[in-house]
Length: 255
Length: 255
DNA sequence: CATCACGATTTCATATTGTGGAATGGCTGT
DNA sequence: ACAGCCATTCCACAATATGAAATCGTGATG
Image 1 (cartoon, each protein chain N blue to C red):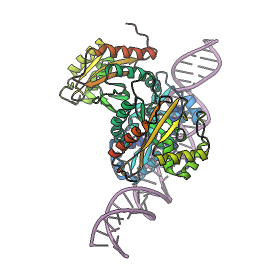
Image 2: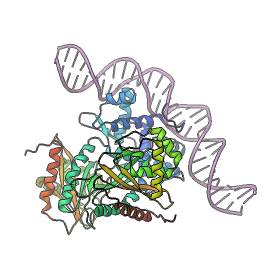
Image 3: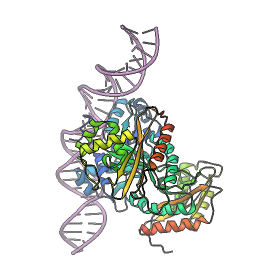
Image 4: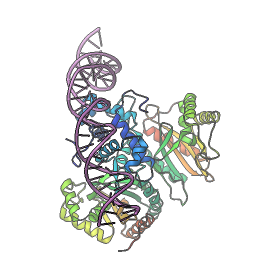
């Protein structure tokens, strides 16, 4: 009933995962009742699995007994394999870029059909774009997302479009395959991508891709600013910062 | 080896947790063989559980088939219950404090015997203390850790000391129960704590506690700077920032 | 090129393990 | 005091995860 990609999957783990997801969907602690309804699990079953998750600190209980996510998830999440290096390497460059442009700089990873923000550097300006580490956005509404799609090829773009149906977030969001293909390939050609209020009104981005030693896309780097402050002159700085990080990851540019 | 706090615990989940831990212990992707040895699980069993974890994106496989942690953990980790509010509320205040003092400001949560860094604001100075979100430190070597211990009472301090044996990180680390008790209670009295190169040479901190609407300790806030730049005059600013955040969390100060 | 060695993967009979219906416990509001 | 609503515990049952052994892949070696 559950898994589609692989015939082998352990029931309890699938159920535990859906419980975690259910908890994550809410902004506040959730009761057992709700979680049972949300996941379709029997209250007894949900209770038992949650008890085990609590024992392993994946989930916590608030004083009222409701469930919320536990800190172990954060501890594990930030230890992600090579990303620990990636973040440590990228951060100083990101801060330098932030200081030069005076705007927010973000580091993102692709995960399926979304980008996940894994590091950020924010400027000391009263107004600046704020993105929480760990938040997500669909590929087709972000600058680096479009670059990643473009790098993956037309076939992948078509697949993405069909899966997601390109939901609109603002009036500028790209909602047709034709336009998405154009923008993505153009962006890859240029080596950078723009986001003109496609994810959020008044927010504009400039993004580039980062490459690791094997030449694969390692992550995305972008600058986010109120659209009226964004300058095309920043493109060179963003590209330079991207190349600097890529170089530190072992990437030797050629083309 | 199983569970200590609760008789009920699901075997597969315990095993999955220990596999995740085993993966996290390594800085690079790990083979099935190693994970089996590390966790004491039969290769077949480990393989099956890992397969399910991969299916749920808690774990990824690199091109060579070795295992590493998956992005889902980060996604879940940063959605931690109320912490999402806590971070959103604290961040602007943290950035203001960073701008005023020109040094790194960190937000931490207690988790067992360690503090976990969950948010940060770094200044645009060439040299500043850098702490990755999600990294950890023992209670007795950090300013907020000592406050948290102090708030928990002498009994808790003794327990902590016995469990951890107060390992030294620098020559300034507190390594005796007597001194730890003194420092902790004194810090709580004053309302702030210092860290004089106790976690890392050349790094000094000033920390305060944050309280939520129920009067409980919600988190810790601290400023980290190279020890020679740290000024005691900052104490008032840090305390004020802490009170501001606490107030937004619904805390009504009295005393 | 054939063979070997080692680890990953799959298979499958088995009983251990998790399941969920029902009963119990605990709390809140009336 | 009572009713109603959840959370929690119990327990007989069989579905589920288990792990020994067989198979598959792959890279090294002669």
